[in-house]
Amino acid sequence: SRRMDSMLRGEAGSSADVFAKIKTMISEMITTMQENLQAETTKKAYCDAEMGKAKDKKSSKESDLETVSTRIDAAVSKSASLKKQVATIKSELADLAETQANMTKLRQEEKDLFEKKEPETEKGMEGVKSALRTLRDFYKGSGVQVTSGERK
Image (cartoon, rainbow, N blue to C red; front, side, top):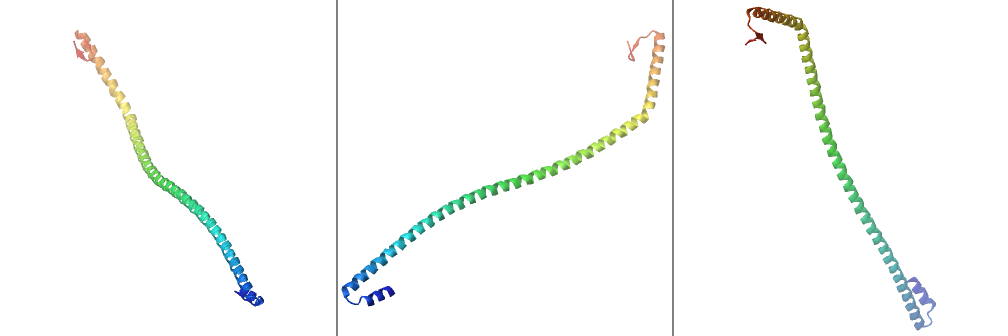
């Protein structure tokens, strides 16, 4: 509007020229506004395109994040399960070690008992063998045949 005032004052000579100048100014303003509108439209299209790309990228990253989160949850679950299995196996191994220690103790006690009783058992076996020989000799003389302790 300052431009318009200065043009009107400077060209106050003819009213036709003033309107021509006003028309020219209005045309220039319209052209400028159209160029600005075109530039804004181009900027908006660029921004819309970039926003679309950003949204697609965001969706892709969110999908990747969800996939990774699912994998992490599965790994955590599996880890907990494995820890539980390890605890169970450790408990079973402790039970086995205790059982093995008890069995070893029992075998040692039985061995000690056997070693203590072995001379007595050997002596008893010699006595039984001697008695069998004596009985065989006795029955041989009587004419009765004895085999394995049974009469025929």
